[in-house]
Length: 371
Image (cartoon, rainbow, N blue to C red; front, side, top):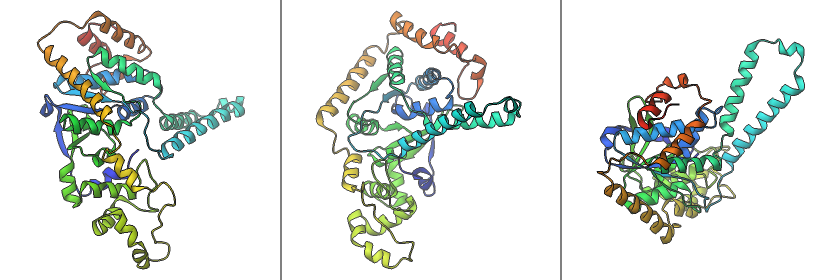
């Protein structure tokens, strides 16, 4: 989830730029795959296989403009994460079970003849709860990897590091400039440009320029991390009743967390009762969080592994640049297997803005497959 209210607060100081995919021709874009999948699966929670179509459509957008996506999956974080995401999913699952149980227990002949409005409202509520409860199962990750192999896309999955850190390390070690993610946390890393909110109609992104953001906020990267820390990251509790903007003022005045803590008695003496700042008594280690966002815990073996995989991929692409041979049979078979799982989707549903072509036309045009 990242820093609460991060982007909305930044937007009060900084206007994001619009960047067209055609302007990014030849650029490598590192993709927050976990975040992308979460949005894809929440959009059609009733069909667990629809992500195939959405992911293929996303890749087609990238390749149409000759941009190169590098997909990054989450591993297991080395820090203890906040329970807020888990709690939201647990509460949603419990609510779903309660509603379904009530339906079974209270269903009578009289209730069966009730208005359809009640059923519709209940259906909408269940859909909303299922979106909140949505998590990415392992089989989806594995299916995506097969799909990426079939479509000649590179992916990175390091078991013992979270995807955010791996994306930042790719930028740092491979002279790549762009990350595509909806997560505000990416602005806390040393990443020049963060892309978000792909517009499937106009083929444009919102672009956030890290250097310009620091300039308008009048803070350094380290100070931006401190602001996020006080506001609450996925790895620490926040100051009670604080906001990004109130914490921005604190860091602009006191510069560091240490200096802020040293002056806390003075700060509180000038505040009314009920408005005094209380520090969390646990999960409030700013050095731990700062080490995470400055990649101090990334080992050299991991850096070498990432660089080697990307170098091999780009070397292969360079050698095969002039090879226009048709996709090999094994890859085509893998893609056909993906599409057999989509048969339950009504093709007429996919004339919406999000898709370049209807599924049937897309498959026939790009893969010669009739679905």
